[in-house]
Image (tube, rainbow, N blue to C red; front, side, top):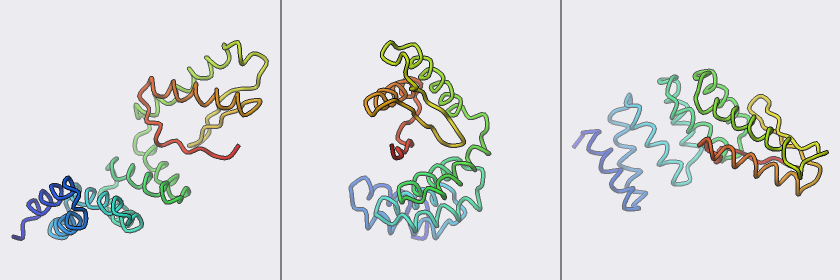
Length: 178
């Protein structure tokens, strides 16, 4: 049948059964039959990414973003897929678009609060007395400072604990060089 919803549901069922090539074909058919359906397009892109076709998934999401520029899930997908491919400039561009879209985002507020709490704990801890240990935030970037690798690791641990306590997803953190 030429019913997009049936192909979409079948694709999801096949994906759950780990029949990814067949699932991808069904999700592609649903997307083809209903090209203006945001959900079908997003799920198809996720399936493409899950089968190792990240570049194609990004193309699908970029086209979807052009048609649905206010959709947060599409932007998060673009950020994540680009980051995973090592395309950090593109990931940052999409992150900036998301922050522009949602300047009062609760997650961003939680991140800011977690940073403030982490720095407060670092400044009050005995093992950091006399140390230059701290965390600074810049535009889409956090920088941790420590006198040595051990202290830097402790700073990271404090930050991760504060982020987790505020339910900030730490999977989006990318560690740079020391």
